[in-house]
Image 1 (cartoon, rainbow, N blue to C red):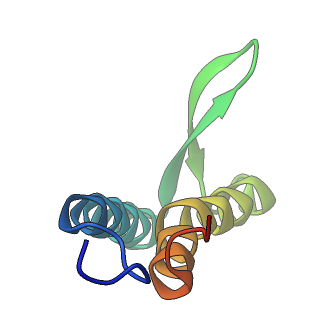
Image 2 (cartoon, rainbow, N blue to C red):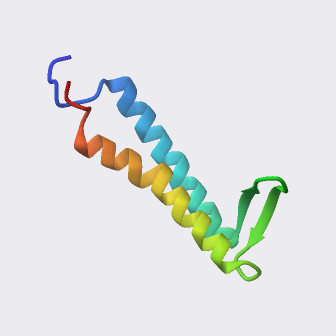
Length: 82
């Protein structure tokens, strides 16, 4: 690589694609007021914002953290130093 402080273009593309998927998911959650929850041992549930607000907003925060904030932080921080 030309600069040791940056990721390769493929990794950057993967991070950007992951962020786009996360943003689209969050927009869909907020637009419809419904989200999907995977509960271990029970299966997949459609969560309504009015019926289960804590599960809805908690899932939204987890998706924002995992799919948007984490890749953004990795891109800002750069690859690990060896």
